[in-house]
Each structure stands twice: as C-alpha cells, then as structure tokens.
Length: 370
Image 1: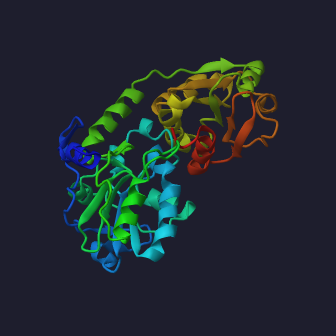
Image 2 (image 1 turned 90 degrees about the vertical axis):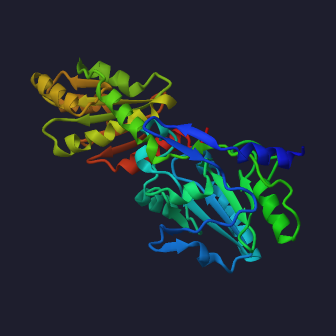
Image 3 (image 1 turned 120 degrees about the horizontal axis):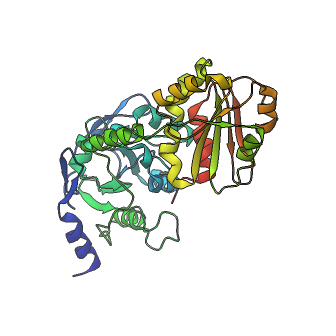
C-alpha cells in the first residue's frame, strides 16, 4: 500500500467527536466526489456561490478561521498561493466553518479576534485578504457537507469540480516545510497530471461545532464560581506591581466604582485572563476608590466576577498613586497599562478601552502561533 492509498484509507474513516451535549459525525469528502454547493455571506457584503467560480480551471477551498494559531500561521501562505496561481486559472475561496458560540475563552489565547462574522470582516481588512472569505458558522451545513475536521483544511477540485486533493496546505506551519502538498496538487492538475498525494493528514484546531456550546457555558460557570477578593495596597506595593519582577505579561487597570466607563468595561476586561492566562499573562485591578469604600468596591468586583489580583489604594492621595504606578498617567480614569516582565510599559491608555487594540498589544507580545 503506497503513501497515497494509506493516507486516503486513514482519512476516509468516519471521525467521531463527542462534545458533551451531542455528537457530530464527520467524514471528509471522498476523492472523486463532486463539490458540494454553497451560498454563503462574505466579508465583502455579498453572498458567494459555488457556481460563481465556474470559469476557474481549478477551485481551491480552504476552511480556515480567525482564532486558530495554526490558521493564523498559514494566512501568509494562503495569500501567496492566491498571488502566484490566480493568473493560472486557480480560484481560492476561504470559508470559516466555526460557530463562535462554541469557542471557549481559553481557546482564544493566540488571537485578538474570535470567529464571528463581524470579526471576520476586521481580520480580512487588517490582513488585506484579496480572496472571498465566507461565513458558515451559523448553520455549518457546508462544513458538514465537506467534512471539515480542522482549520485549515484544504479541498482542491478540478475543472469538472471533482475532488482531487484534500488535507493540509503543507507539512509544517512554523517549521521548515518538506512537503508542499497543496501546491503539488495544483501544479499536477495544471499540467494535466495525476495528483501525487491525494489525501494528507490535517492538523490545526478542531472545527468548533455548535454542539460544543455547552462546554462554553460550563467554563463560564466555573469562572464565575471562583472567589473574588480585594486587598489594600500602599505606594511601595504599587511600585512593586509596576516593576513586574515576574515572567508574566501584566495588565494593570485602574478603576473606581464612581467611574461609569470603568464599571462598563469590567465584563470585557475580565475575559482577558480567561483567554491568555495559560500563556504567562495576568490581570491586576487597582481601585482608586476611597479606602473607606473598600466594601463597596469589593461588592462591585464580585458582581462582575473579577476573580483576579484586586487591590485598592490605601490613600486618597491620587498623585501618590500616579507617581507610584505610571508617571505618564495624566490623571483621569480608567487608566490601563501593559507591562512586560522587567517593567517596560508596552501599552498605555487613559479613558475607556478599545478592547481590540488592547488585545492586539497583548497578542503582539505573546505571539499568534505555537
């Protein structure tokens, strides 16, 4: 049995994933099968169908997404394929198969964006996607029809729209590539030759089927059940926080119960440690409430489930607080700084946060790939 036949036999077996509430039975589309039809919304504001690409000699459909570190690692290579093959009659369509309600926050540790349609628009604009990027996460019917088991997952169809290759783009997302499987398939089809390897193993993040949404709810319940505490801190303690003599990237958010924007952004702010804490990250909140308002501040933190290192400054002297924490802080609340290990401030913002901007600063430091 050669490598092509063995791989095809392996991946033609039905794969079974149990996600708690129910199960999804997934079988990747068999070689020789016709391309399943689709009619999906794109980030460009219009729907795209399979027949829109009838004039292409070859159709490459890659199921990918925003959040997966493997998918992000391949974005540049996908763009290169588009640039190098579009004049040869190859059309490329990217489809996001994931339902964002099935993604736990701790699965977003390598990204600033999840997989909602609106966030797809942001990714496509920021990363200059010059190919259709379509959303299947609402019903996932197309993902089921193709048998998408991970992101990225590639399906290449010939002029008759028969499947000639399915699997990975190549054999390594961040290390040296030895097998350019998708490119080899494209080159063979363009030369009217047999595809050398028709099926390869797929690696990346598993497809986020809606069946998994129950695990998202359970993860949120576990977080909300954690104890919330509030400790007093003096100027020397604040200086120590700012020095950040740890190996973690530290975000310090200064807030107060009387500050409307501060309270309004707490629910989004508390998602950060749920996303990034497994990667050497910590969130610290620092209340600027009067010391005698400690109980009130603690009640607010408990209401918002802010189960992180929470402090309240033990003085009404806000100048002393600012001098200890960040001499560039002009005074208003909220104030947020991102401190790298060793004390270097890599991001600061006074006023209500742009959460995407903050996440971009965090991921820019931590990295987007494994």
